[in-house]
Length: 120
Image (tube, rainbow, N blue to C red; front, side, top):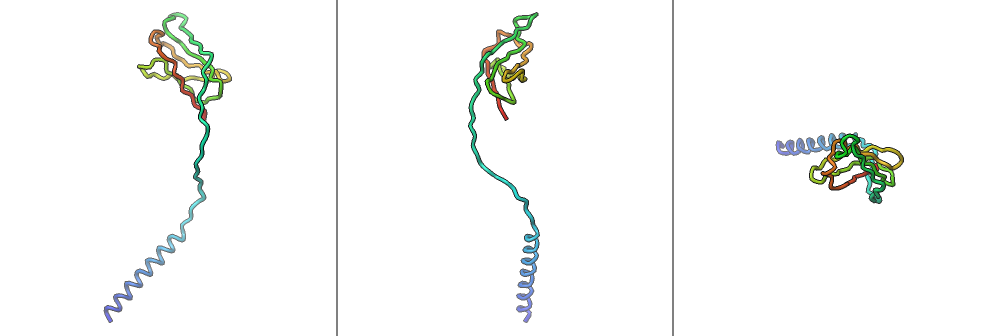
């Protein structure tokens, strides 16, 4: 009899835990969400009309470089010296023409014009 009572108590405990777990799970609500996958075309820009502006007082330094990307962009940076890694932030002038302030950059150190542009 004691063994039967023990088994009945164990069954009752399992049943009570199951009911409580079901009730807890049944009360959960999950909002609608979205997930997806897609592709888009990534193409480069064509940099044209590059203009280097020398400092009026010290023509061995560059004040700015400007260029036309030919398409809209939201962020543009340039690097003019490969070894230093300095990136100059550019601002939109008009249309698709960007200007980058390089005040103080020594002209003789320039060995590249690397343009990185993004459109968000």
